[in-house]
Every structure is written in structure tokens, then in C-alpha cells.
Image (cartoon, rainbow, N blue to C red; front, side, top):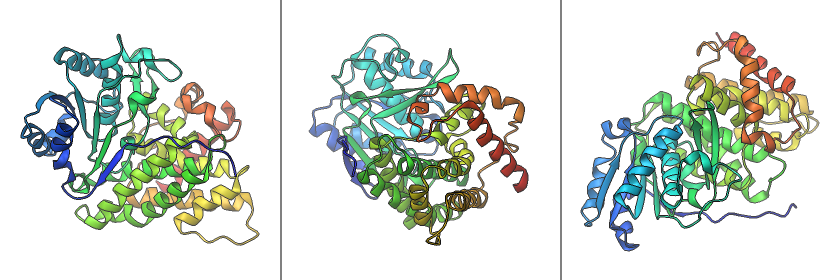
Length: 391
């Protein structure tokens, strides 16, 4: 068994209406003025009011930042960070999906460090003193509440960058499945497929693979295949919502200590160039990626397949395993309404530019197989052909 290093996770609180406990917990650690980071959609859906009221009822002043955007650009993070600096806040509360949580992580870094968030990409050193940070997800997808990293879009380079470290780790993650009931079918599907990508990639990584992460990844995959179609079709099904929130968190734990690879690299490129929802972008790439990885790691791709509910013959070869897993993911994409490249008007003429973005992505250095541009191009081509067959 490989040696491995497990990164400490935030305190986790799970259950219906637990989000209303945020005020008491912030007060307990001495917060007097917090910045709440969210987007206008979460506000309009009525998900922030009760939480903020519960915080204010404890005598804590709330500074509002509602300018979060999808694939949060550095300009938004800098704006929110400057507001937090100006108001001299002593706590951060993120309410929303991955974009809100990633924005809050950037704010956390900026409260203790000067300048712009683009100065603090992966590999840089920054002041580790940090502000207490609470994460309250309203989607079951990114797992960002459990991770030590965030993804920010560089507005000048039009690509995604990773921020990493202590400043990106929450003190408390509050998982209230009630907050996901209002999520429409399509974002339920895309965020759910982000969970599958996190878990499948964590289970097939090479450099940081470990049995601890694998355990959480397998359970996350099992839960996605059982409950995601139900959550998409029956948004008020509480059992499905609860289990998808657990799946997202388990996958977040898995990829924090193992990391993600190719599907996220391609997904980041599609998101940066075409603003495809992150989970949809990863879902489009994932079948081809699993098929490609099975060439050198059929054992763990087979574990992915078994967690999905597939049965394999004892003598199944790598090609058979990879094809079966790829087809099963594709079938799930179709069932829950994940678009194809064709649906998104992404043509073959854009592939060379996408490939260039993929090899610049931070995940490129974590790939389980040494992968060149022609191989990435081939994966995109296969994804395109899958789309043609479906349409």
C-alpha cells in the first residue's frame, strides 16, 4: 500500500435546517462582523434570508456581497475582497454553489494578503493567517466545502487558475439538504455529474492515489448512480437530496487528498472558453477520459464501473472495461439531460485551442498517464462522435 498524507478537514454539520445554526456557531468563535458571499440567484430563490437573519439575531453584523458570477473571475474576487478589507470583517460565510465558495476562499486569502487574487495561484506563498470561514452549499456538486482549493478565472488570460492551501479550507461546513430542494433539474444534473467526475478521477489518479480517498470515491459513485436520476426527476425527494449532498461531500474529501485529472482539465478549458457549466463540461469529457485511462489502469477503472453497478467477467480486458464504463457514463448523461458538444455549438474547429488550454491547466501535471496534445484531441473527437450518435 502507498504511503499517504491526509489533509485535515473542516468540522462538518449535516442535516435539515442546520444552516440556521450558523449564527450561534459564529458567535461562539467570537465573530462580530461577517461578510456573506452569494449570488443574486441564490438570493432570489429565498435561500439566504433565513440564514442571514439567524446570524443577525446573534448580534453579528452582516456585510453583503451578492456579485458572485459563474466561474468566478478574478475581478469579482478582488471586489469582494476589497469590500471585506474595507469593512474589517472578522468572519466569512459562503452561501451557494462552487462559485460562491471559491469566491469566499479568494476573499479569505485577500483579507490577509495585499493585491489581487491572481498573485496567489498554486505554488505561490501567502500569509497563512486567516479569517474564520463557514461554507453553506446550496448545490450537491463541487464538494468545495471540504476542500483546500478553489478555482478562479483569470480575466486577462481567459483561463482558470487554482488557489490552494490553508486559506482555502473552511472552519465549518454546514450541509443542509433542504437548501438543494429549490435547485432546478438542469443544475441538479450538472452539479451531480461534477460529483461523479471528482470521485472517478480521484479513484483513477496515480501520483496521489490512496485507499482512504478511494473509499470515499467508491461510496460517492454508488450514491450518484442511485440517487442523481431521482434528484433530477423528483426535486423534492428528500432521500435523494440528502444522499446527493453526502455524495458531493464524500467526493470532495476524496479528491482533496488524491486530486482530479483529465476530465477536469478538459472541463476547465471548456468552461473558460465557452462558459459551459463546470459539471456539464466534466461530464462531456468523462466517458472518453475513463476509456483512455483504462489502457494503463484497468483495475481502478473497473472499480469505478463496479461502483456504478456494472458486472465484469474475470477475464475482462482493459478495452472492454473502459468501453463499458464510458458507455454507462454516457447513458447517465443522456438520461439526466447533459448536453453534447453539438448542443453547445462547440465545433471541431475549436479543438486545437481547447487542447492548448488543457495543457496549460494545473491538472495537467496530475494526469495518471503521460498525455500529449494528439491524445487530448482524440478524447475531444470521441466526445464529439458520442454527441453525433446521441443526436
